[in-house]
Image 1 (spheres, rainbow, N blue to C red):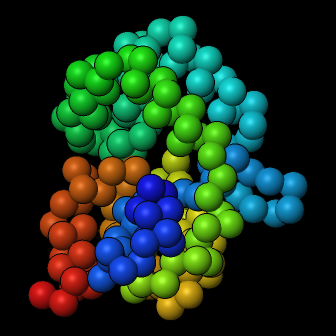
Image 2: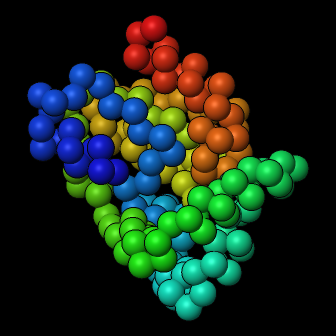
Image 3: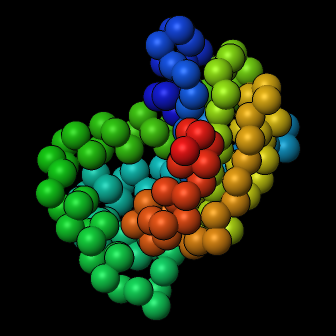
Length: 168
């Protein structure tokens, strides 16, 4: 969502914007918004991350990757998590999972591509539809992929969608 915030504040710096499995808010709201998690889920996730970062990484990477038939992808994500400074990862997770950027979506004034996966436990399909409806003129593409990291699990489909949007 950093790209959304930047494009909203300085649209002259952007020709186009690509949002890869975005979520402006991960926590479900009483108003009907479905982000995919309850506040208690996020509290538990952040507490687990705080208590045992390496254990959290090993447990969450396969779920985030969402491709149990391809364990090498989960291993790649686990290794990436484990190379990250735990203090930075905890701060990033707190900001990511507790933020609410829904109000900024409507201020994006550049052509925007939203890429979502067919199955994603982190950003369910309702989130992609919400982002598409909130950003005027945006385009939503559902990739034939599972998980929250299509750049790893479906790199060709991801690259083709981005290249088509970029005009190549």
